[in-house]
Image: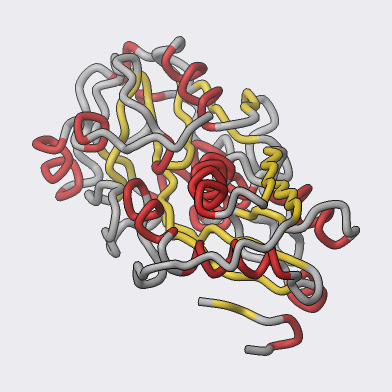
Length: 296
């Protein structure tokens, strides 16, 4: 779905079934009674909170959905002693090396890792086309002004044939269709979200096979930086894994290119299989600091 300003109209990695289905037999039991204590949590001690960096669209969306964004501000209330990771791969490494850790990241670029497991949230597992999962968000491309020929050709590809690539690891937002490139010549720079980045790299690679006259460079920083650089005219497109703010919508055009889930992960030694949104809010704001107090 395309949105217009002023109100007008790493390789891509597959989510493995083994990761997403970990503990599926136990999650419904835990979800049925959120006060039911889980044996073994008392052995984990202090909760080690892993968060994405400020400016990350994944962090912003996670905080907003879990309910710990400060009122009338864009700042979240993530506990100050949280360990910071600058992408999903770093979150996986940090959680996998600490049995007391909890983290989150893009489900679309999760890889099978024997050191971590994905939790269900409120009894619902993350997965493509799973409308009941509470931590879902859109991936956006943003741009400033009228698209030139090569930019427009690339966007036509993403909206149509590119949705087949999207559907491999994310939820497509458009119908897959045939694509005939007009083969315009030009260079495109895409900057922003590390969650959107792997998908854009794959889309760009496939598009350049169809249009050898195009050169597309994808630079992964974070959502806020991608939006800012697009406003400043330093890149052709920005990538964002969060919704745009009102002032950003006034300046930029933007379009959703995929839907993704934010997966919550813990170390494989953690006996937990399911967690509630309320528990996530309390963990990430420091109201719960020990695993054994999760159900108090």
